[in-house]
Image (tube, rainbow, N blue to C red; front, top):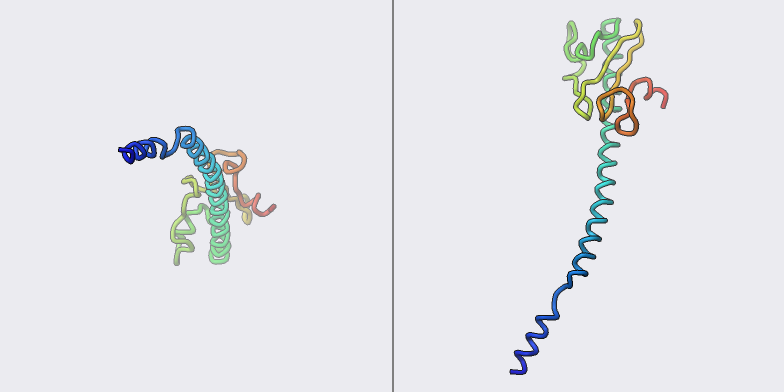
Length: 139
């Protein structure tokens, strides 16, 4: 009979208290928040780097187009569908945020390519900042 009473006491005192569980949950929540902010920051930086890399690809294809046709393309689509010959790019991708790149020709030898960033509109800061050939040349 004595052994059953001891088993009952051990069962009642084993396990975690509510306070201990709440402390563990709070620590997990804090760690998840820290990791979440770091991951979101890395995704934003990756999108910016991706847009810059795509703009560099456009610039290389535009140089090849100008050498071949002695003029700048009227649109980025001309790189994938030139008037004659093989395409210089397979297709024209959208920027990492899913928006179309903006392309304009300024004179016979100057052009500008812009991604409006995460917000898809001119201006902005951080991930929403514009990425353009002008800004990339200045960096």
